[in-house]
Image 1 (tube, rainbow, N blue to C red):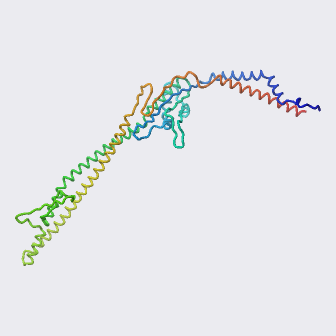
Image 2: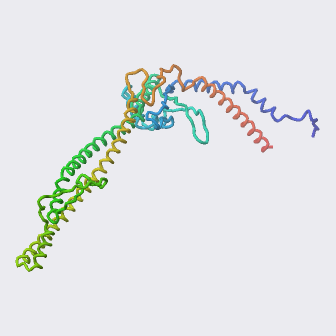
Image 3: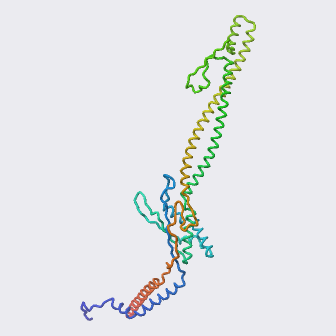
Length: 388
């Protein structure tokens, strides 16, 4: 066996490199064939185009101390299926085609937002959102983007303002109901106040039947805050009450009067009936006073409630004034969202990139051809070794 010097040791890569060099034209030919074939195949592939546009999210609150429109929320609303279904229907109607499946159609839409500041406390997003649509056909893609923006602003361009309008209308409805209730309470108050003098008079007459009083509280001083006393002096002698007549009849009976016994029995029966009438009159009078106080408290509560409702109506009426929508404008705008730019018809397709794809196919095919040649050579050597 010959002894080889170190510099004469065989190079394991030399045979492989020589093989590739000898077959270089075949490898290059395979690569070119793959490139040409790929380019030709892509000529029959439908071209896709990408259209971009921007919308602005108004960060100023429509309601004082209220929530501001959030770009995250707007991004979610932009991808709502009901909105995109309306866009799909317009697209199918415009180009007279069969409407694609909504699950496939929504994949054409993309919303991108820029993070301005991201901390552990909060994440601040840019108020400008970038919209992107990728679809087949340049005019078709531009139409889809336009329809997307217009439908979105028409439906959600005033979404916080719409909430203010709904609340304003609800408060106005509640105010109408409250005004009717206050009118009813006011009517009942008037009835109670008009009936009080009569009830008070009936009670006073019943009490006078039992025992007329020379000293009386001023009827206008029901709250007891004033101590006005009326002095009533009747001349000649005032009409005696039942209780006084009963006392006189008892004296006459002690003196031996024969008629005093019958009169005393009649007086006792009359006193019992009058006492019952006084009790009933007192209950009616107390009930009237209670109802008057209750109605007054109810009216005060309704007045405070109406004041709060009026304040809320003022706030939401101011917010509702921000409502804006003009579907004929060049740039659709709402109180919360407006378009910053409208799409233009794209001139360069986004897919397929025929030249780039053909070059990639050539490189891949050449590499595969080289690997096949090297693999074939390696297998041939193994077979010869096994035979030897």
